[in-house]
Image (tube, rainbow, N blue to C red; front, side):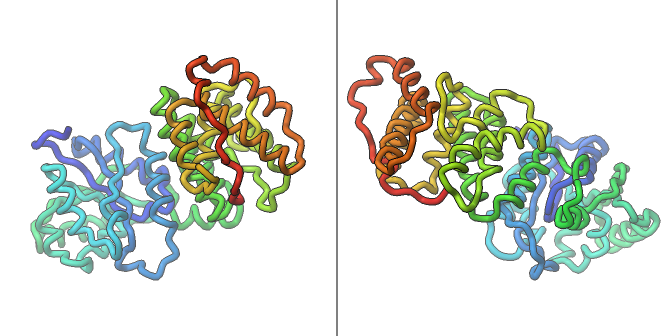
Length: 377
């Protein structure tokens, strides 16, 4: 809980994507202004960029959370992305001030300082809130000083130029590099880079499935005492090598292929994460709890439309082994009905789970028609 005497910084912008320059400005503001916290506040629709092709808010919020989670004094506010329509900073800052009951310092880049007097209800914004200005590469610091002096004289605004290290990178440049297939490593946080690459490769429809698996895997990990970050990473990469055309061979092979890509392309070294990716298609004997979580999250994520999915999902959320046993039994039944071979790893997983479950867990379990109706995920 923030002290009523403390101040928080609110850093506004598109963050499309968030990069190391943003994080350095926020860290400088924390130290230089003795702030309790910095909230990154991604815009929904900027008044001056209403026709811009901006990455969906959900993705920008997710990337910000990935980028800031290692710093307990960073946070993400969805006050603007939760609100439909154009984002007006004065409304958002007032909302946050009422919510936190503390002073607000609005953090912005030098390029935005030039335009701020043109913003909606600029006089109210500049008289009610203090500003902290991050210096960007190419900014004329003398010009920034002149602009700040003019605003102070006209509105009485408290404006603090930040002594941040200018990083020669912008979100616009990063998007151009990625579009051209150029590396953005070391310019954005690693998890954000992986997220963007998976999103680009999978396309909108499949990536929507991946995000649902991530959310459910992270939630299940918290429920069952596993590491939510590891679960989310494994879920993010689980379908990286999935062939959009489908087919039995790729359905079996894309798990191991994605695990190799995770190791070789994204430097994932955690064997439990790699195994959760590798075995999410077939299962195996001796699956770890993380493996079970990713396997089940992929199977019962909210976009699935199998028969009796709600009942099955309830079992998976109550007991990992019981849920996995039911899923694998139905998978075996489905494959046999279609005249397809059942993977030896699936058979081994079924036998292993049967031995692991307690006698009381075996009572009253019925087969559910999970694979009676499939979607294409």
